[in-house]
Image 1: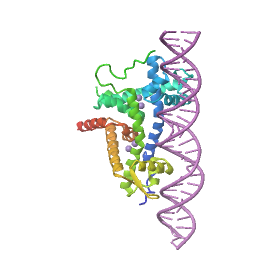
Image 2: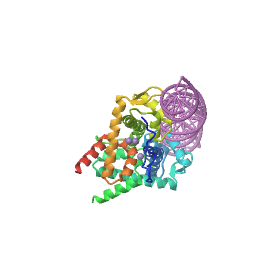
Image 3: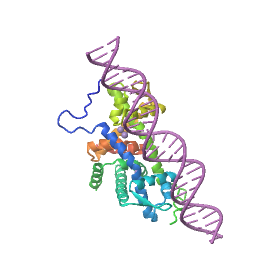
Length: 151
Length: 151
DNA sequence: ACGGAAATGTAGCCCGTGCTATATTTCCAA
DNA sequence: TTGGAAATATAGCACGGGCTACATTTCCGT
Ligand SMILES: [Mn+2]
Ligand SMILES: [Mn+2]
Ligand SMILES: [Mn+2]
Ligand SMILES: [Mn+2]
């Protein structure tokens, strides 16, 4: 039952295959940023709609309590993604706005692709909320190419 | 700046749209089961390869330390997904095996679809590790239909 | 102008998911 | 057979991300 011989890399000179651990490690790394992505995207939406993003509105749209949203905003602030003053609205920094733009683009593209392969729009919108965070640049490019190529 | 008038449901008799909060709540729920899904799938793989799933092998394949894997196995045990005796291997219960089968099928289907729309296999495999957990039954069905329909 | 309602902030709890350090057990080779 | 290496278990720390309860501040209608 020896399994010490699982190839950590190929014996020859070739690049090692992306190992299982790489995949899982990648997924864990993404998981830790997914929440920030959802927050920045949402704050961008609210700011566009109302001129500011209030804690209460953020919390309601996310389906969490406001203390939860408040804590998350503190983390966002710590990471330099938003600015805010006590008892006032939350606003994206340039870094936050950049993240929001990128995430929103990914979100839309994922929804479009899902619909293009036959997923009902409702389900596409629902599933995309999770999927969007795990779609790499490479895959995004492929989605674009696919969508362009079909008319 | 009044936003108390955001429609919680449509004024008429129609079903309320899946609201933003629903989407995020759904994604949060899935996030909390994704780890179990990866573990059961991996334990099934190791069991098939070696006749048992050892903590060390689980940890190495996931790219975490063995105390982390050990703790996770305790949670899996608590949820009735695995059985194990101290200092021995880990084995799936019927429920765990069922989860593993379902997750593996989803994993493969997601990879196949990504490749079918032009994603390079390497990237497909990488991204699928995260995406797989967020694909609903409805979307899975659509993937199957799409893949069948293209020859 | 002010009093109550709404919004925001904070404290403190729970549990998950990672880690390091250390103890214990099992296994294998000499 | 036994001693050391490998595997496993456990303790304890950190932090994320959820909650409730309560304090504070802001806002608005009378
Ligand atoms: Mn999302
Ligand atoms: Mn999104
Ligand atoms: Mn996975
Ligand atoms: Mn998988």
